Length: 456
Image (cartoon, rainbow, N blue to C red; front, side, top):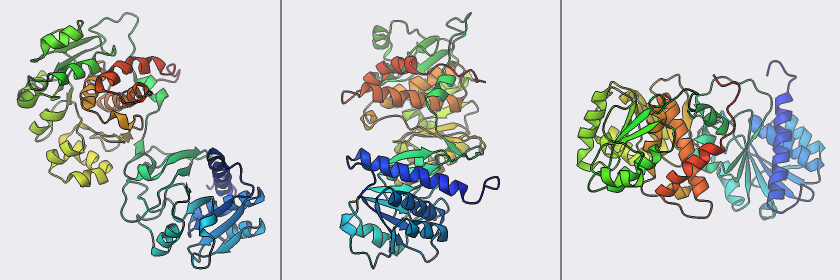
């Protein structure tokens, strides 16, 4: 900010916001800005200034713009610009045209705001219920840094953010209040983030590729002690996730051996491995499977039943893959609290068990025990992925990446990305099963962009 003329960043943000509002109107089949009724909800911060300057641009494009001032400290320059462009100012109590607006622009509070909304903002939103909302930077009322919600907040159809995504755009439950998130580049120089999300190019750089002189052992051997007489399907699904070509060999040890090898003839039996996957559908054998794998001294993926055997750090690199209910039982917390604060509890569990924790959910959250490593949030996937056995596939997939040499945080986050992308691909025609997700993983890998020449 010090290197630019005063107000330059706000003008860039306002221009991006105005064009995003026009795009939103066009996307709803309403044409451009001309003749549209737009109401701005304006608080005291810079987000209110962004909204006012954007409103001035929209007014100059022929929109009828009305700003409801929710503070007596609204951005003075923005107020003057809106008035000069023909916009009007009012308050919640004086406006009588609430049902006639085409879009609401939420500029109530910005990234410095506390969770929740003041009563006047709640009243304004109640009057405008049912009208599509475009939020400036973040939906007002959510916690920007943690993704938590506490009290009333805006639920947006579109959130237009500037410079970079914020944690609340990635982390649930706040992310579910953002609607579609549109990023406007305003030329910021950014520090190392606390939270990040992989994109396709990042995953392409992480996916292991065979060396010219590679062989099946140098590419990594992943072992699985999963499944049971009660849940033999879990073994087949976990093996199908592991057997996607990312590792050189897959070993299976367990009661479903004949069934697994009938469907995957290349899978072999007991022997050494560079990583083990344990717990999925293991029922009564989960503790012994974990003890065996732990004694091998190689990295582990610990899922489902084997999670219950944990009581502290394992002494080997590990990835834990609980859903909220499993993590609640593991750390003796309420499931609802974990779903409300996934970032907090993923970090807490990673520190407690000295392991990478992959907390499954709509936005899977992946935390390292190293506090300086950014938490990763996976944004791929579809609600069709909420199906029995999908977690077994994920565990096997992550295990193969771990065996191939990826660091635990990379194996967990790349695995989650591929798993979600495969679900989206497989569900293009409708519902999908866990085996369908596994079958789609190789196609997703083949579709990844070329490896970046800057790969390090």
